[in-house]
Image (cartoon, rainbow, N blue to C red; front, top):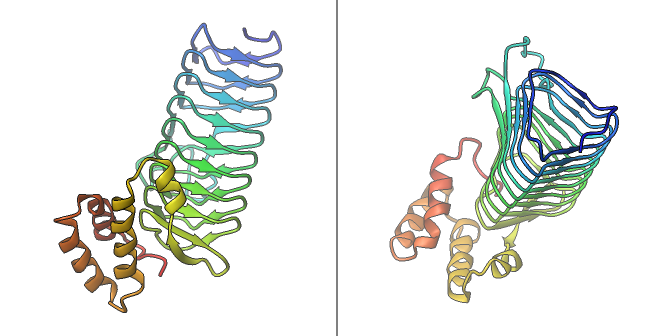
Amino acid sequence: MIHPTVIIDPTSNIDENVEIGPYTVIGANVSIGSGTIIGPHVTINGTTKIGKNNRIYQFSSIGEDPQDKKYAGEKSFLEIGDNNEIREFTTIHRGTSEDNNITIIGSNNLLMAYTHVAHDCVIADDVILANAASLGGHVHIGNNVILGGFSIVHQFCHLGEHCFAAMGSAITKDVPPFVMVGGRPTKPHGINTVGLDRRGFSAETILHIKRAYKVLYKSGMKLSEASIKLAELAKEQPELKVLVSFLEKSNRSILR
C-alpha cells in the first residue's frame, strides 16, 4: 500500500508489494524491491537500488548527495541489499568519482537510529551499527561487525569481520578481524570471544584466534614480523587466513 500523500518520481521502479507511509518522497531513478516497508517522512533519492524485505523507518534520508566538497554533481549510486532494518533519522549517502562511485550496504544489517553511512562506504552482511554510530567516507566494514553507540570511524578505515567496537570508540586505523576495541584513545582489548561463540566458532578455533592475537599484540614483534609469523600459523590453522589477508591489504596500518 502506498499512502496518497507519497510523492514518487515517474522514473522510479517500485515493486507492487512495497508499502510506503505518508509524506515520503521517492526521487528519480530509485528502485525498491518486493516486501520492503518504508515509513512516513522518508526521503529516498537516486540513483538508489533497494532490495527485498527491507524496513526503513521514519525521517531517514537515503541516497542523498555525498557530503564531499569535491563532488560536482556527477551521477553516483547507492545499493542496498535485502532484509535490512534502517531506523529513524539514519542518513546514507551515494558514492563519488573519487572511489568506485557507489556506496554499498549488504543484507541482514541493523542500522539503529541516527547512524550515518558516508559516501563510498561498503558494509557487508549481518552488521550492527548501534545508535549514532558514524562512518566517514570510504570506510569498509566486514561481515558480522558490531559498532557500539556513538562510535566513529575515520575515513578510509577498514574493519575486519567479527570485530567489535565498544560504545564511544574513535577508530582512526584499521581493525583486524576478530579484534575487540574500545576506550579513548581507542585500543585493542582482546578478541570478540562472545561474538565468535554466538556465531558457532568452536572452542579450538577461538583458542587459535586468541593465540594469533597474542602474536599480533603481545609478542613484542614488529607488525611485519607478526604478519610473517601469522602466515606460517595459517598454513595449519586456516581460520587465520582471513586475518593474514587483512593485514596484507591494510593501507592505514592497524590499531595497535
